[in-house]
Image 1 (cartoon, rainbow, N blue to C red):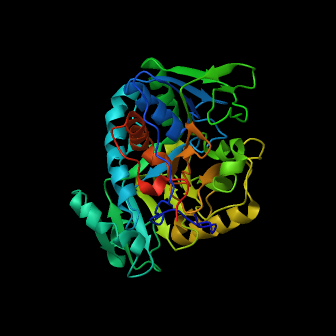
Image 2 (image 1 turned 180 degrees about the vertical axis):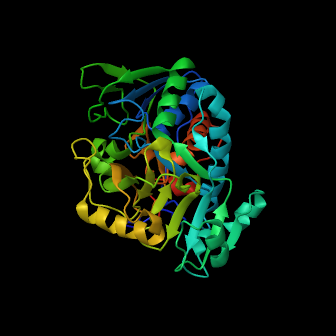
Image 3 (image 1 turned 45 degrees about the vertical axis):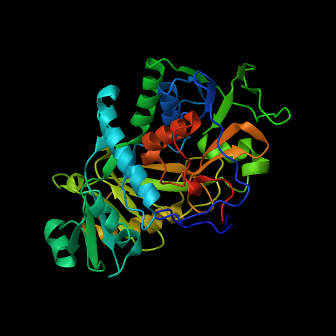
Length: 400
């Protein structure tokens, strides 16, 4: 992998596996699988593994959707746009189907089809343009809007420095915290075993892992261990993943809107400036007008780090907010969050075997864009472990 970190992950580069890449082990039906981490990746993987006939135990230190986790914020964007990277486009198409199918099982909606508006500064915007053939192939073409059309349809947006926009009507946002908790509840209802506890750093015995030890002293055994513990993944395996999975602090803000104005009716929006990639989600269950900062923040300890905003990052975000939405000139800051991003060096996910233990599998590297893919990625993980599908090459640990 390249050691040069991406500033954003709107279009992770294509990756090729290095020689010597190990295959994911195929499990016998009924084998016992221990999944560490109940976030979007771990929770959905545990659920699909259970449905594929495995005996599954799910472990999390604080529970799915907790405030320390990458899945713990109120909302997350769901969009298919990934430049020319068709793997993620297709994964998102399947994820959209599964999010909608599971609403009835959850007993509440978690996907809101608000649309996603891409605000493009230049005539050519590869991160969006290169996805257009995929949208047409899937029957979900984006709508091209000129600056004049943006002004007419969305008068609350200042588009003076925008060349055009694309509206993805199929996208929108997800209720992240609620959805993660709903997956955990569904896993338990369908017969899975959930344990709340902190897993200590694993100790290999030869070329395998026999069990994991919780900080309570309880020992959990299994045939295979799937570590999908987000920002903690690099800490649990410092020798193998310490320089691969890193955690940064990403700030999001919830601003108050004027009474009587339709800010909540706007689509999800993404400002394609090529650097900060500010994005926003309207409504958020009454919490306010969300503005997120996607440019990578400073290193962060997900366990002990204070979730307090940086005055400088907020100052810049507020200046952008006032520029893009002039009507929010005097908008008060209602709430703020620090969201841990578990970054891989190139923004691609990691789904691979420990180099020294064949029954230890890593799943991580969400890099700020992973949440939406949870149901489809979990399905893929379960199918690969069941031996019915192949793992995408760009998810291997060692890639070039």
